[in-house]
Image (cartoon, rainbow, N blue to C red; front, side, top):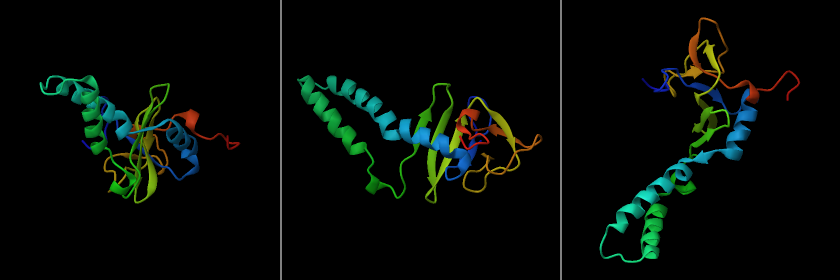
Length: 159
């Protein structure tokens, strides 16, 4: 099923990154989040180095590392490759996991797995089908999904 955590079966919660309720979380992602390139390419580079070490005509470690770096650099995306910024991934010290996407240029935060489970009035549609719309309000009998942990929400004084 789309937009459901495969480990837990709980829907992702989605919140607009342009609202007041998402400011602290958006700030944390911007400061400490990682792009897919930053997360995946070092793994790919390591695998390429392992494979190249088995290739007979290449003798020196520096030559292997140069070839691996060249191949990885060709895999990287640049801002020119994408109309919108890359997805950013963020996992905080409590194990809460988030992704920052851009839908139509608007920052949109996916709560992938958090320590807060909530019930929302509506599901997102059609851009993020089946995910919980955290901007729609909450209802005890609503749709279960991950929510934004309290430490990222502003208190009554705007802090």
